[in-house]
Length: 72
Ligand code: 9UX
Image 1 (tube, rainbow, N blue to C red):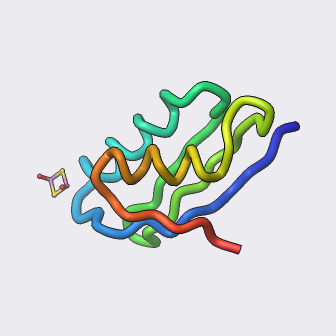
Image 2 (tube, rainbow, N blue to C red; image 1 turned 120 degrees about the vertical axis):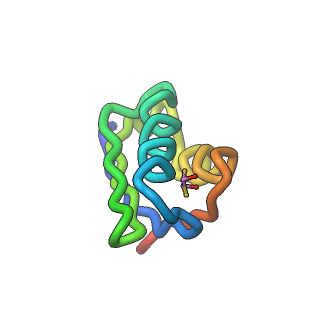
Image 3 (cartoon, rainbow, N blue to C red; image 1 turned 60 degrees about the horizontal axis):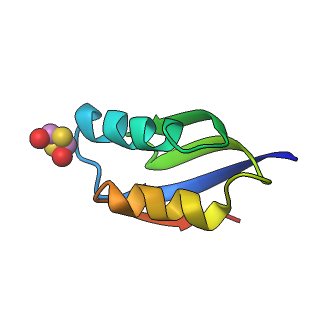
């Protein structure tokens, strides 16, 4: 099933930060689209829930060096 999720991302201070988060998310199997707003501190991710979970997405952002929380 294709789903989308938004996460609050903290710790990004420049556009290279948000680009690296976008790259980390896009590299995840099952992620078809990832956009990150540096100004809004939000990542929007479209993904196939049979391949990747919200938690995997959150962990990928944290592995890239930032904090993330799934938004309701
Ligand atoms: Mo530029 Mo963003 O050094 O950490 S990549 S501030």
